[in-house]
Length: 370
Image (tube, rainbow, N blue to C red; front, top):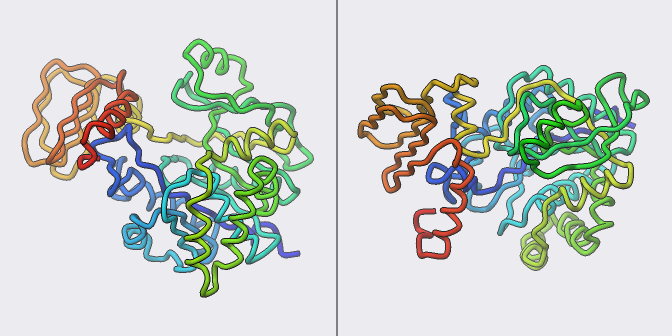
């Protein structure tokens, strides 16, 4: 059999509206297409560049919506046409990753895939690559592997992974059984997780044989997996569009956490590589501010080409897409996002609540601003 790493394909799910980053992130410009770190690369471009040392272009796949196809192609000129998978409508991560797995399984029954979100920020690429290689070793032995991040603080915005015994039989270091996936905890619980040392941040990365992932998903959603395999069987034929149009709309919207991760952990089929690189899912403007200031809480982060900001005794973040001056005096942990048609003002403490505004606008005739 071909060595495991030569059968490994990196899958980049590029979806989600990033509603907590509104009005910067919108339906036609979701957060994965934006440069939120000031590096000059979008989050999608940074993800692609991070994965190229692990897989050549013929083994790099992107799953995205039809509406973002042209933008993805423009940002990733080395993406092969046969490795761009588009969805006619969003169906959450089970369908997106499941379809990629079904296509890869069809191409090579022994293929291994790794799913890495397009909208996360990672620092420490060498440590990231080492963790992925360790996960691929475990995946080749029939396990579903994930990569957990050693927490640096008691974060309440991330999910956690409860780790069990070490699995030195699968890899020489840093790999453990997964006993449970835990939803976002309150601060006291997160503090206890940090103190115990047995919990890692859940970064939402999954590495497995394509067939193993699909078979696990089929235990929860057998009809969905049957449809995904049927779509994949027609993928490179003249019937591809017709089959996808017939079956895709009927697929359920469900996260892969519920169809794969949690059931696999309960069944003893999930392992976790404990990693030490810096990671953030950039879930809101407070996260963006912390990334740009690297934890210097008394600093003001500024994002935007040509942003004009005048500040005195202020901290937080200003994001500007306009040509007007933004002036702040005595504002602590403020969030100001200035776009041509929307001005958002909040605080870092309430940054997660931006999603509530977006949800209210959906039902109040504000869809043209989303």
